[in-house]
Image (cartoon, rainbow, N blue to C red; front, side, top):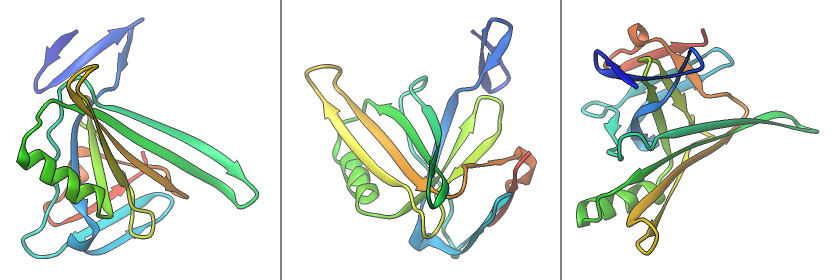
Length: 168
């Protein structure tokens, strides 16, 4: 493992392995307008609202995506998992908010690319499980079932209040 700028890269058999290094969320109620298609997602926030960072233990971020075929067509089951070491009132309050709200999240890979997960109509559901006896960590899971794949955003396409992200 070596550092290159702000991102950490792991080389396995000559290939760079992507890692989730950042997770950010937005409550759906903060979004003024959102549209999604097969190749883009557009998010416009209400005034004074924006993506919020979700602090997690470095090196624990994982993203899985599975295509599921049914009679209705293809859907995608996406899950982002991470661990959180903080067990304090502020973090518990944050978990409670996220567990009872519809959210959209975005994750950043060590390559600098972002993926947006969830849209209005197919929000992300959050759950947190504390395992004191085993690890003392919160195991956090963000899950979304959607007809849309998580959409990759190029770093240059991320704007402050309005985002337009396209498939590469």
